[in-house]
Length: 255
Image 1 (cartoon, helix red, strand yellow):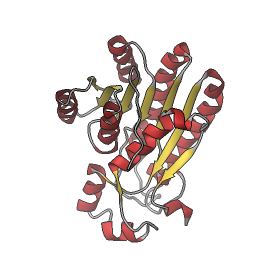
Image 2: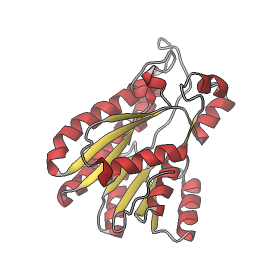
Image 3: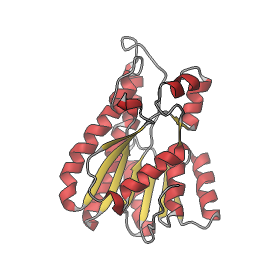
Image 4: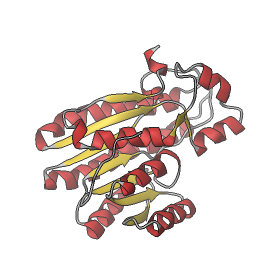
């Protein structure tokens, strides 16, 4: 049973918020009575997610955002503040996976694309979120890294580089902004049952049985388990937690 939170009067922003980890987290924030901004590049899933949460009685704003475009990110944060007046919590979750590749053969455009979204996108989001939070003197940010930010894996150099970079961004910014009342942390999910992972399984890039067997808890994770970790890091219960890269991976990186 997850703890319950009351984020009444607070505003949460979730990128990549219309499916997978982002949608589970947006829903959890909404159920904890926060006003929620769901941002995503996919307009179809964005509309569905926003409509579903609104129909359930939650305060929700859907914003199309391409996190690789800083102007789009700036507009997302402006829309958040224009609509709800503030920004208290952010989960910078938008990211992509790319097919495995021999490091000697990986095209530059693949490296550039994965880093534009997974790393530069987090940088841009955090930059503009911090501008608002600095003015308020408060806030909490959680950046989505990965177990791939903590370990290496053959065939995944570009992806793992992006996720290692997220941890560097997180720890440096956390030290800069902790004295200003803003806490910044990262989570490092393991293999979670999401549409992205399902697509990898379908394409033969991942074997679910092997993934479960390689995890001490002997199963894949669930999106709501990541959401629970994000909400805790944003809550007063984590008020002394600053600059961590929290593995939520069933024990994979503890081996």
